[in-house]
Amino acid sequence: MVVFQDAEQEKRIDFLKRREEEELAQMLSQKYGVEYIDLSLVAVNSDALRTIPEAVARDAEMAAFGQVGKRLSVAVRAPENPKVKEEIQKLTEGGYTVVVFMASQESLKRAFERYADLSYATESKAGVFNLSNEELEEILAKVKSLSDIGTLIDEAVKSMKHTYRITRILEVILAGALSTSASDIHMEPEEGAVRLRYRLDGVLVDVLTFDYDTYRLLLSRMKLLSGLKLNIVADAQDGRFSIKIKGDEIEIRSSVLPGNYAETVVLRILNPKSIQVPLEELGIEPKLLARIEREVAKPNGMILTTGPTGSGKTTTLYAFLRKVNSTETKIITIEDPVEYHLNGIVQTQVDKKNYTFAAGLRSALRQDPDIIMVGEIRDDEVAEVAINAALTGHLVFSTLHTNDAAGSFPRLIDLGVSEKVISSAVSVAMAQRLVRKLCEKCKQTRPATPEEQTMLDFYVNGLVDKSLVPQNRSTLSVPNTQGCEQCHGRGYKGRIGIYEAIFMDAAVEEILRSKPSEREVLQASRPQGVPTMQEDGIIKALRGITSLEELKRVVDLQIGA
Image (cartoon, rainbow, N blue to C red; front, side, top):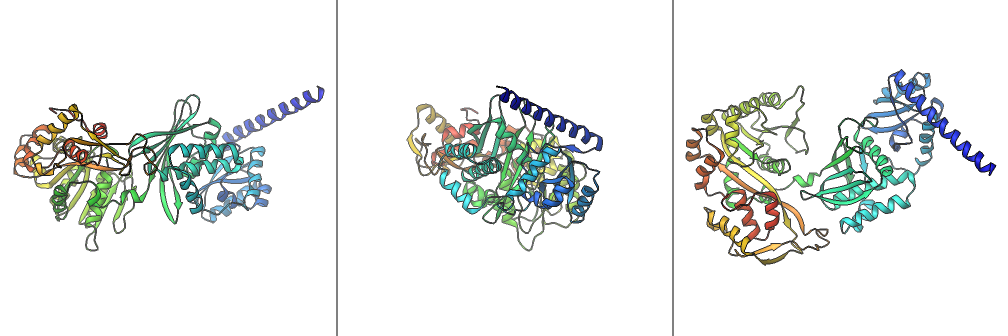
């Protein structure tokens, strides 16, 4: 009994000493004006640790624990130690930007213990998460459905050594997202656990929940990879890192936001392959595509795409740019941010303070471009410069935030653009949405219900060009509720665009003189014969490309609308 009490007392004394040491390190960090770090709460990056030899690190009581590009995070016990200053000088001369953190002696011991693991770790470029072909293929082979991802993560949590557990969990989360073609990974702390969700074909799907201890370490790992500050928890932070797979680098844009229970994380997967959709495969109806291609081939004018965030506008604009890109043309883009890189095109990124859309556009015009892409027309200044560029021999691509194509014209008028100038500058205004495609392997068909038939007939009868309607007008394709391996049990696989467009012609030009409403612009454009987004969606539903339920989720289908 006495022995037990002595052991408990020693444990209590050790805990108090440890807490006292951490509190002292925090106080000294304020004195020296550097950030405090507890290395027991963060994952120590192997590549960072390698930058300082173990003997030097132990002698100077310092350890590098995080590295993104040439930015190196170094924990030290005493910033004024001459040996620390000497080593930081060497690192600076070697091209590193060193960020110093204050840490306790006990905290540094945990970093020193990691030197023993270095012989087993693989060299990797900072800011790049290496996923080997073998690891990826192993994970992909096991992932047949979303529940398999949860099983793999549970295995990692329960069976792996603490040192490698967090890295393995992150590997499974990222590989699972890639295998299911997810566009975003959401980690959302709730009252009792942390919820992991993927955005698959535009819809959020639950994957699993995991504990807070695992999440805290995982969050630190993601922050280090993304070049974010570990000790900031009350402010939003944005960063990025890359996944390297089979020689290709896929960029991950990370966003950390303070939440009710802990910081919430969203990882946006910018896979170059997802943007490399040819213009012919976007889902634009062939007759409409032929007319758009004629406008894109012109040497000047403005082509606008509209729609909410996540409606595929960037993919459409990039498809246009690839169509017109040649060795004979100079193309400049002004984007916020540059998400995907295109060969043979000058891409620039706006800066909110100095390099705005308006400033970037003016600068771009001095570079003698043939074609300009402006990421978004947000204000009257950008609208004015973009319109003038279209009038002075440039082909201009841009986006507007309006609900439909007809709304583009009143929006430009609201931004102070003259109605007469709009008719001379704008060639075509498009609107689009993305709908999920039914899985070709497991989709099913059934007769339309009376209510559905009434809706189908309403939109089919409203079409100006009846040749677009398929012969089948009473049978609908629906998702298989069980799904299959190909669609990971979801019934849908991939997405396709639904489109509408208004071309500048005499009738639209005439109506613009009276500063019309969206409805008036739409009525003036109906003789052009281009289906609305609702009509285009109904055509795709009758062709079995998507379901009526999916279409209702994306656009407003109302009889008499």
